[in-house]
Length: 275
Image 1 (cartoon, one colour):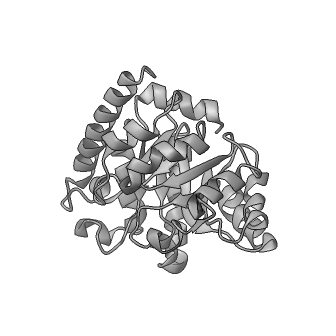
Image 2: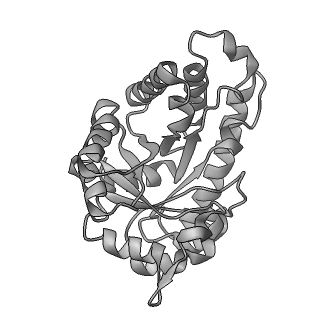
Image 3: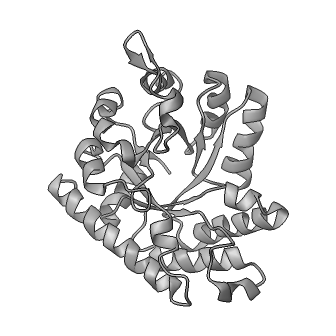
């Protein structure tokens, strides 16, 4: 999926919502545990209930690989199901990979070719040769960690050298490797007030913004500081949608929560004159 196609989906659905499939088997509704593949059945129901309102899904790979082979099978089936039933949707592997070149080549092949994700989150710490292998797949995206929403972000990301913070260095240097057509950045919603400065560095790139909902980030603040003329935002919500209800009504409740966020997003897009 290219930049224009993603923007067209945002306008069509009046939404820039990404649903995070952080499908912890310990938290899914108990009645699903008797199914042959409980996590896949959970994901399938969530996707069916929210696809009308979401432009993207983001499985967090940790919740799958922690279950060994069974988890990887659940992940593969989930991606194939979305591809089959909702081919317009953008699928992100939240894998946070990044290693020396030949290893990154294998990670890139695993997620962007074998599993056929549209994008993968990548850690930039090891530099150019750890990132560029992910950029070799046409129509695929790297989503580079820049300014994250967790408490530990203050340990390194704000380190200042000669008036430039580390996350700012990541934003500037990485533009030598990719462009707005194949590179996005992770910017946490709990750092929304800093999006203005980030937009000064990367005015046209898409930003993947986690932290809205359960982590306390404000959708309105994110849009205020981070939205550009092409929206430029993919805002993720995980727990607030997928675990809104743990009864047999879980999918319907997930759909309701996704609808609420989509409604708020539609208003923000209209205010900006995008739709």
